[in-house]
Length: 630
Image (tube, rainbow, N blue to C red; front, top):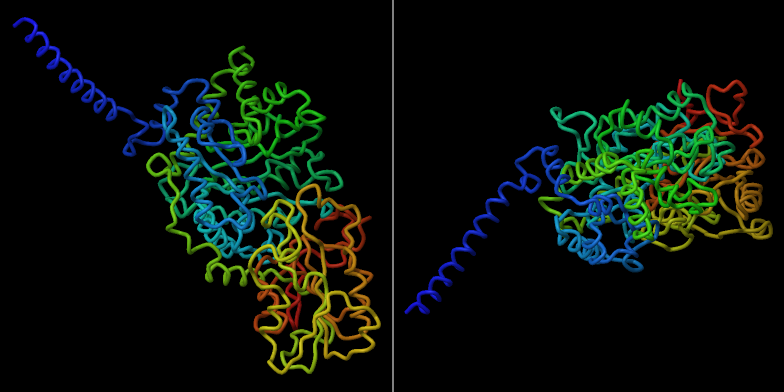
């Protein structure tokens, strides 16, 4: 009897214990502030931060490339973010389904960690979701600067956000708000203009990417308006466009007043628009690496400007604090994190970063309040993005990738970006009905050349790399059916002598490039462009369409051509070029940059005492009259 009673009592006790544990867990769940969407963001951040170990905090400060990431790494190290570096894709010509599956797989690891903190996935969506096959490729920023149209740029931001979210990605490393002061810089096409006012105006793209900030939303705090929007990134802080001789990642020599006047203005509205992140520049300022510049990153950006999002390094940016890079990684981590960098784009060796930063904190070289500031900012962005309520990607926006509406928008952007610089005769607009016309040049029928760098891969690539309409295809589609269109990529003098044409369209320019690979000391049109111009324009009436990321040396060829159009890197929608060549729309673009005569004049920007341009900043023609800025 005693034995039976004891057994029954134990059973009853077990049931009661399970019940008590369940009730306690439920009660605790109600009290877990960071999981409660009814609580304000700052309360949720404080609560979650208080529960985190040092290891979990440092994990949140790490961003790694998708090629290094696994579910287990995301879970075990509490990694804060994953990125696709230029050309880092699930597979060649990956589909929307491939992207979404990959993002969710990695997110599964993150949410299964002890505290279930979701990760952010970042990508260089700098002219559309440009790493992704079949995405709409918009004109690069220099072309958008020629439009002088902030509302158009905002729409492009909206379209880019939709196409980025379509692939499950929620963070775009855009916009670049550099003010390029020397076209020899290989990133000049990423800059809207040499004029800080135009760059400042174009920050409206942030509202397109992230959404319009509600009136009652706290100023300078990160804002992302739901699952059709992405976190944006203003870059590269600061002075990246002012390096000596335009050398990428080099030194900007400038006094404080000029820094504030030229390179800082676009950051003010960006922060007020709730930009989620700011990326630090590889470059130095008066000899001090920006990745180690505590005065500007912590004191000015976070202090004076009251920026409340997180600061992210560029890829291996802290490694390059030393020369040679990575020669003293402990020092680099100490200086970079100490300067105020919150998230480090490592991107390949997460254990080295985590171990190094852990050592520096545990041994008192970096205070815990610096770590807590970094993680607070990262979590603030994640809560603003709604990731704790819904961390998952889905296929609900799959039809947005490369949609007709977005391609129509890109086509509009192309035609508004083109700048007519010469029109003798006038030759333009071209007649659609002609006996026989010639289309020539390396860039006339090449979608890769047309799009430039940061397209499918980091450097971009010539050839049939993605979907779109080449300039040749656009011309063929718009001319009268009776007009014979002859295409010859590089006709010689003999070909021109043995053929007759009503007129010719020559499309030449720069081949794709990005960053330091695009630095150029001479800024000449690459061969065989000059040979094509000489052969064709010396034989028949011609319009030369220059595809480039910046002004190039054209003065020697100007007398040969009847009309000259700057097309920048127009992207995937070549119909925007034919729209204005044949007069369906008028030219409205104006130079966002000064067009120099010779490289010996550089740097030369509007307002300089030695200003003597071939075409001044703001210049542009219509078919009938100048539309230059006053």
